[in-house]
Length: 354
Image (cartoon, rainbow, N blue to C red):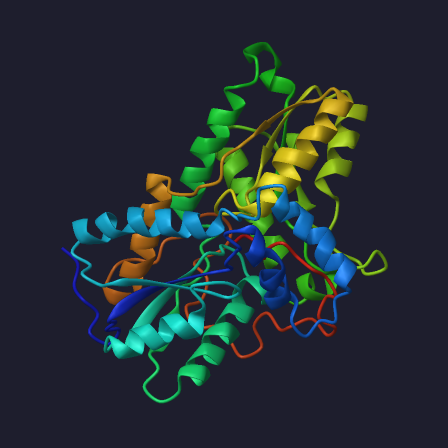
């Protein structure tokens, strides 16, 4: 029996995500949207486009957003949260300005936004807030107010969902070898100039620690590594790379590794290409047994967590977090996660933990 917080009245829920192409003809226009203003060489765009063409030009992220909305609707209904759910993307249809225009025409005055990113950085948090502000400016007078839900890297149900999936992966390794297997937690690499001014690495490390402890894996048997690096070779980005780490594991005598895309919420392009293709190929060449953990996707605990985060803002319910840090802030400080001094000249296939 929760009480409604009348100071936080909302007319709608807004799901905000990265967006992705849904056909071969969409790929280059999509990548041009992603890299607009960065002066990316055409050959680099064509190189990244091949990742999408490998899957016939379809990024799974849009369909995964549809599936998440379909799972969230009955969860909200079950708990009496009678708010419509809208969906807008940064880079591809449905684009945020179009969604906010639709919301304005429907009479929506104030919305609560769930961004598909669980960690803090410029590209996974602040840039989305800037995207929303730009969309509001495009819509003009009468555009809905939008408040962003906090990041949730240490929410107990986010950790529990990941831990269940990790345990399912570990169960695929022969029982007699499980005491020697390793966990490789992966996240989207970002430039050091970006990571130095945010809590991205700290938050990721805490998620890894909490999940590893939940499945009974000691600190010496897991490592946070990175994937999907897309910047110039001379620019420092977060390391080590997943494939380099896999090679090091094999050299040290490891036979089994569970790869856990802790930095991602669904199996979109980076997971499919960088892990299910490149990392799998690397392990095959190395003779290393790799099992890849699923992302949280529509795990019931993850969907329930989203509902709880919504209830934090509309009802008098506790703000939950576990581990060494408390719940993250609801309202970002002005200096939170600033943009890197020199925006990365890269053509990424996605954003951190979308």
